[in-house]
Length: 70
Image (cartoon, helix red, strand yellow):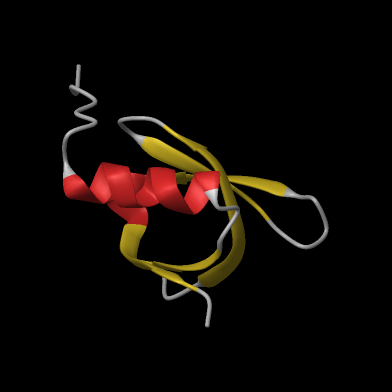
């Protein structure tokens, strides 16, 4: 089981995106780019909701990068 360490800066940054309802871009190893707001995160995944209110579960190991949408 993976420990969910809320003291890590990456975890805290994602929590800030969730709290601020900040739109983000997720780049995946498949070269897909997903845009939306993160609803929640856990040790293994993120849940992103897009403009159509469609939720997508993304495994952390599938991420290349995550950044705020400009």
